[in-house]
Length: 334
Image (cartoon, rainbow, N blue to C red; front, side, top):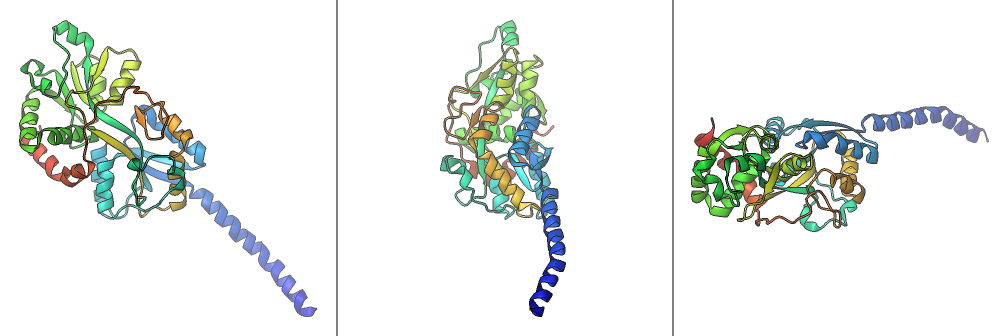
């Protein structure tokens, strides 16, 4: 009886400490419910997507917007201690490079069961939540004033009449630009591809830092043609700008926009929660309000038609990016 009483008293003395510890753990979990992530999300979509994720998960989010190329340079410099928990909004080729360097955490999310296997890594290292494609933006007002025909192909852009009328992103900083360059290489082969880019360079008036900027500049009438990505054109067209999207008749390359968790994340539990949520129909319906295509079956996004896509090899792009970009800078950097 005396022993039982002593045990009960001891338990009562320990219990407040245990509860305090548990409470502090719970509080600590809440405090660490912060996810820092790098993203190349367009400024117009960054806040709405972050708000949807935060509302759906209860996580506090701290995004840092970087162009795709800038983000890769930063990740390489920071490795192996990446300054973010995750990357949300990045071309697949960069994720493959990060995976090759052993920087990513493996996580197989059951929440992605309804999304086709082609949009997610079989080992759980990356998840594709939307995709976009390279295209040509054409200012129809300026085109009419010049009396020019609408360009229909990549090779149409080599016509000398376009000299000074084309704006394109810089492949050194823009994932959109690298998509265009690697698309040309995969369409024509490297020898003809370099010849094409040399001829195109003669017509390019400006190389921009951002992949979206050429769409904006063409829409505003600063140039007739912008080499850009689909949403940069669709968004401006929906806003009433005199701009049309051209899918080259040879076909165009596309990029699966992915999310990954970095191996050194300080909040693996929160990062997994993030991944789970972005695979839901609820979130993909939000994305569909801002993106041309999403990966959840049956969810229609902004671009209603199916563009002519080439069989784009993201692995080739990842394996050859450094070499191709080094050569591009040597040949065309201004």
